[in-house]
Length: 518
Image (cartoon, rainbow, N blue to C red; front, side, top):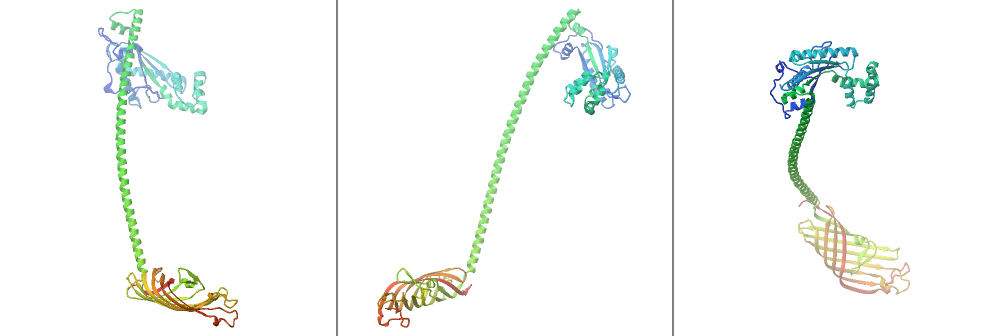
């Protein structure tokens, strides 16, 4: 199975053909140097490399799968570690690791073979064995790294997996129990996500701290002096690291504050731009709404004006269609039909219905003549009363509007003749109620005022009021109970009455004949 080793690709053009020779004395190292501080505080430096191999092979092939990037990373590590001739290397340790799948024996053999193969590659490329002692180790199955990866994850069945790793021995079926756990779900998850990280080679460079300090101090150091100097250098290195960390923190804080201020300035500027844009949009929206509203009002006014013109045209058309230039009219007064007769004052007497008919002839633009007739000769109130009445009249008229339509106001002169016979009831004794029965004739003449209202093209309503002089000659009499002797002629009492009075009120329904155009 292929073993992955975490490593950057080393291209031929970038490879180091040979490492620097061990340094000569005379140069001084400073706490200010970051490499020196790292060497003094850590004492070593490691890199985990992940390489892929063809099946059954231990030879590193640079262009196989992901090896190019890994070998380039290795080259950068070696350049950094060996770039300073004053940093003395004591030894180099190579450790090969395998993942847990498969048999322990096969994994151990594979880890060893590929660790040795990695040493061969380093010797071929960098000739490390000629300068530094190299120790090679291998770990058949890296359960410690797997435990660490599981502990740091949120995988399903995490606690169950850790329990098996911690409590079941490798040679007592630990891997088999993991494979059987929960139907193999956690094992398949680890196989995909964790096992590739177990297949690696670690290169660890151990520095010769005693020689580095002796070179710096220009003196040989006993073990006690070395330990004191190392503690002092480490304390100074850590203090410098803290100082640099504080400085870096201050710089980072200043940078973050500058970035914050820049972001705030950008935010404020963006807010100002957004507000300005919103203002402009609101202004444009208001202008657009005002334009739309003005357009709507104009359209509404145009619509209303069009409706008004259409209504006016329709009204004029209807008015024109209802125009009639009358030639002749027939009419009847509704008040006599209802039994109302003027009493000679401003009141009316109520009798029985009186059929009546009137005709009118129109000529010129504003002249007409009407002639009317009325007749009544009926008993009423169960035969207790009687009303006989005839009226014949003529009336020339002058119409105020001289348009030939004969509508609206008019004035006229009228004359009317007729007779009457009024009986209020039978008399029980001679002489009783002699003033309740009248008979005679009359005439009247005077002025009239009227108004004609068109209802349809031919049908009109007319109001006419007459006032003038009336002269009436009458006889008052009694009416006998004997049915064969209606009147008591011996008891007629003659009288005469002349007066100026309201002589007639007419509420006419008129039907006119004529032509639509002149």
